Image 1 (cartoon, rainbow, N blue to C red):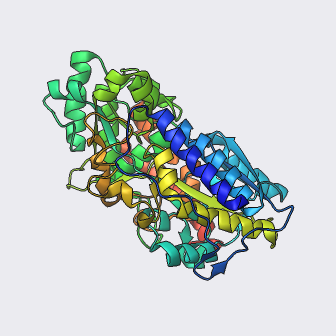
Image 2: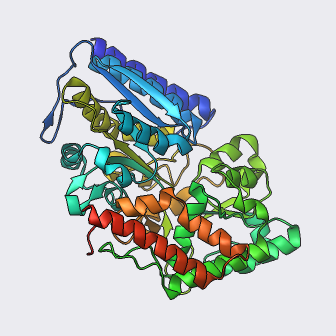
Image 3: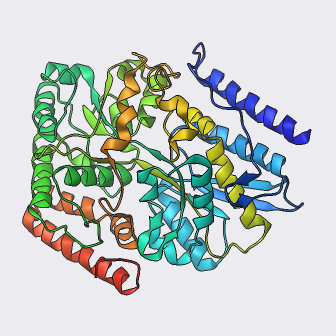
Length: 471
């Protein structure tokens, strides 16, 4: 009875949160009732864990605050139902890597860390989660390619993480400004972004907002640009292919865009800067997840109403690919010993996926599932993307996200994320390269050649350690 009451309390709380966050709005479809199965594929768990079982989770402070409120209550109710003492620590997104690194070095820390970008650079200090991923696939179907390529390392045949969700990263534009510039549906190509962005900047003094700073949004826009121009860091077999005409063309484009339609602030932005600038009405276009839009609905309704969304912009050859904005990946350090804590952590991850319709809903549709069948309400005809339960006007404004998987890449594309790709990201080599060229300190060819040499050294180090293919 205690377990049943706990589940009911959690469900009532979740629904109450939705009502408070969106007064007067009735969802077209409701999240599924919470459940905590005892078995997932080959993994079987006790109905309740032994007294004294503890689980500590460190994860980022979500860009949609209501998600953290829901998650913390969900974790406590899950703990009550499973007889586990759960502690959740929320930290700044920028501190995740250093926190995990320190824990691995010290040999102690949280049971689970939730990373927002593929963490294979830490693989030597992580436990394999092959059984968790296999159990999830047995219960929920194949893992989304974005998530699978971000948590599995083929050369080691190892799932070093458990990716439970991901976040699309559409293009976001001010409808009225772009309509006046001759683009009533916003830019569809990078050429549109340049031509229309220049027109808006010259007419209204409002710049384009894509950064060249050592932070998440800049790094992801730069990768999206390079992919769409036909370039990449590596090929599908872990060979470095960065020094190419396609990458040079992308760097040249970025420098031209900056000189014609941007301001120097883009070199010093943090992860919140383009969100804040767009909501304040001082940017005409950004590439970002919908978290800024949810903020605008509350604090600047006129900006929210004037916000349009675009899928990946097409490059010169017609290719359109944008990186995911966040990859929600749990990892377990090697210091976690076999026993009840470890088993509880595995059950927690799987139960979260089993209840992912609640996670997606309480993130205000920010978090997409790694296993699509767990949230059929999201993309169903007449579902949440067709009829946004959180007040979009028009209600189908977010339907562009229905096909997001088709235009979304991942760190390591077209291959898998690997320790070398992860290190390139952590060191912000691409944003530094773009900034050097935009500021006139190097030519595009010089900057690409130099960055390619840095990337080659990183790849060679990990290849010698046995963590890369290619040879």
